[in-house]
Image (cartoon, rainbow, N blue to C red; front, side, top):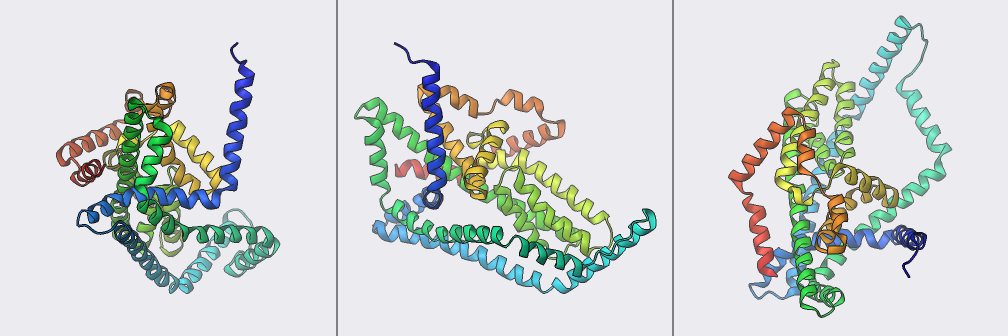
Length: 390
């Protein structure tokens, strides 16, 4: 006798709630483990290339980890120098903010007959009052941040172990899900290959997009004449890894800085327009061309994954749940009984192109022509080497 619908619903709901609960409770382990897994997949071609020269796997894995750490140290040193330079202008920034508040008080008093006395000292006093009144909540937040920073140190350890035992993990997946059947083994092997290619292409593409955006943002801010343009440009580009919200967050800081430190309101408006144009190119040219449509989901599901990730794991959830969703789509597409879920996650090209503006369609067409000309040799070579290593 077939099961009643409410029985299936009860089991599905219980499984979903248990999964979410375990994800919340095990965040301290799952988050660094997922980051380590993604970066280990990215570095596995480099480790495999070293092993061709008869370098032992434990040394090749260590060399890959050291390369990643060196890259992070360079990025951290850059931001450290920029923050030090930014801190030297805090006195000037406070003076300009005080002048702006005086002008605002004068404007309100003249045009709206509103008497106010807003200055930097009162803002600082209000800030310290807020900190004192919300000390417990802020302490919990700092404790959570410290826990997150502590878990960061687990990432290289997990990366090294995943690279070291990657053949063991692969064989485990084949044995666990292949069930000894030739057809299942081929399907699982295909899923593993597609996931590996997807993760490598996604991370490599994101890094390339960040580099392009950093150059464009910094150039735009330098032309306008904004102080610390490179810092603001790189910071905004790195926030682009957070879909939808990241570009907005990245543009707010230079807009506010120019509003306070520059003499005219036209500068913040120009900066806002510049970020909008760059973001238009990013969403319609750079990301579709470099990252590729195969790692993309439709806007509805992407937004849903974004908010679910934020609710479960906070900011890191917003970053991790997008590639997790793309991996789920690969699995759904390969499993016949789950194909309809893969269709739900994917994009419908015809509907997407109809919703674009004329300018966006032209940008997209230019990007497709550029992709045909360039053929993305770096990414293609990486994918080819990955298939060879398999």
